[in-house]
Length: 148
Image (cartoon, rainbow, N blue to C red; front, side):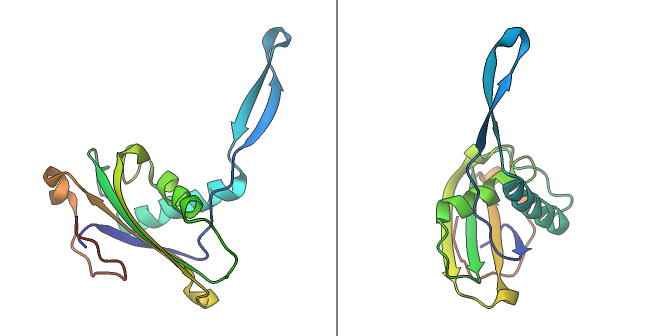
């Protein structure tokens, strides 16, 4: 598959649910704020940093986008694919695409029980808009092959 491929080393981390915190505002009115847990923010930052390290000058894609992901987890403890995927998609907001609502095509695979040293997330981002193909670099195919 042609696209912007990169690897995030280490155990794939599923996004945790935001935490609600009650706050007191002006005039004694209370409100609730939702905070993303620090572990989730750190995992999203790892995705962001891995993408930028591999594609430092790649422009943000503006049109519809496809995403291929293979999660290689060293543990056999179950993690929902949608939560693993959320970490990747949120980590790519503003760097691979403007917003993850642009993702119109997904191919996802979870591989469990790999050796600890082999735990990783392999990601390929590709535009579905033919006009954006000129922004891509050619790369070697990875384990996940998808034709846009």
